Length: 270
Image (cartoon, rainbow, N blue to C red; front, side):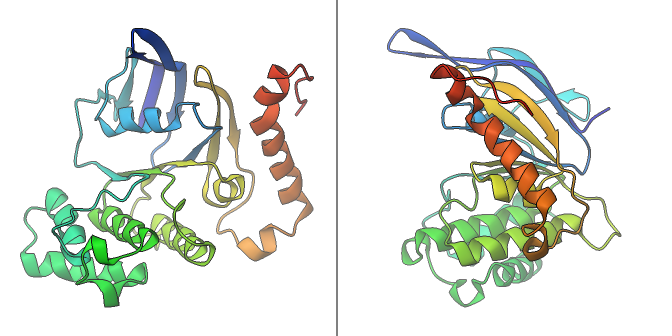
């Protein structure tokens, strides 16, 4: 049994009496401890899929199972990083992170929660800003607080919706490496199961075990692709290899294949 099983998922919306299909008959599975990136052009339903996994929306048809059980709303087994910062404006960065920890570990004392919050804010480079409110932080810094909160919650499943999109290139690289470090762990505990939505093909290759390529209108699974590179991955060395560039070019061909078909071109042969 897979950790997450998605069966024939369809999501319809009605806007101004017009029916719109965001996802149609989407099916794939994610193994326990697997890092899966979902990639595709805007409008392919990536964020809609994540919202169903989060439990904040329900499908029109089909189902998602976690550990063999259907999703019934949100749960403490899933940590989430949204596209937008979703911080409580009346709480400091430190208290925002501690609040997330409290939701999954109610037995931890206030002192313990704050200590963990400080550790993760330091990991994302924000320890000196821990007593600042969201309005006193830049957009990228707010997102780093949200990432620290999700990582500090230490849930079995981590759902991430373009978490690094608002972050500058330097800190994006640092946070990618941090995410991999925490996911890979020290070998003494099980890896988290990660579902990661991104537009960035290089990011998907670096982070993922598997990439699910989506096409739009309606959102459907085009291909599931295993990433062929061993872990741990050295970014600087990997991107210089012939194998990396060949694989990246194939993914780019897939990414643009639906556009090619719509303008009358030939399907890309992979």
